[in-house]
Image (cartoon, rainbow, N blue to C red; front, side, top):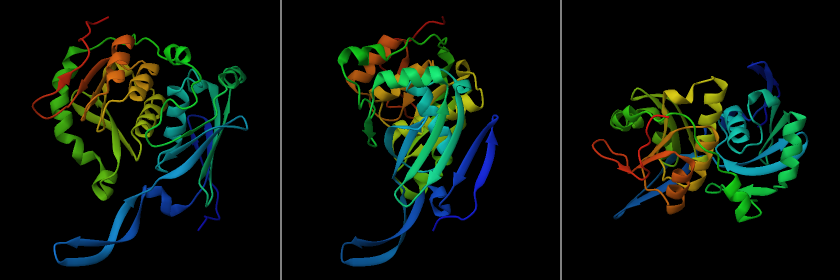
Length: 287
């Protein structure tokens, strides 16, 4: 059921309009499931994570359709716009309008004319899946050019903060607790999880976190990103785009993620557990 009322809030001077489906704001829905164990069978209600198409539209032109969990959409839209290099900063994003329908969600954004000209030159028309991050790139040379250099100083004390972050991670993942199907992206400072966002797609979760960091004007030199997923190349690229100096992940990295982290000057730690982790890029000295 569509809500009849139109909710408007003001975020950082920008008007965000949401015409919403209330049941979708939780990120999960109750579905009937039959559980079978040995000779027993039981039918009950279980929470299942939501995944729906979300179209991102810039100045009236559709740019991408992402499959994502429909929560924290303002953070998602801003984080995606920044991490994909569509806008240089939030000052170039003038307005966001979130529109819900039975088919999915459309996020209309108005961006600066200079950013829009650059976007049109990229000629990217793509459909993003839960594991997508390079769709629409037209050449290997273009891919090479997309990776910026990280200039944020690396703090060696961050390595000692991985263990307390691992210990506290489960307490900050409500959607994962309900569904067992969400990736999480967290911001860690002084070993404490200061912010965390969840989504069915790992890069979507990261975009939501990056959007939040930008909205709150959090200094990226104060901490690092910690994710529950594997370390894939698009996570490296997005972190580098936001000048984040370290990414830590629960699971393994890919070869391309390691290569890109080295190229960008980003510290990558994976297989993070309470008592151990593996460094896949050389520890940087403070710049």
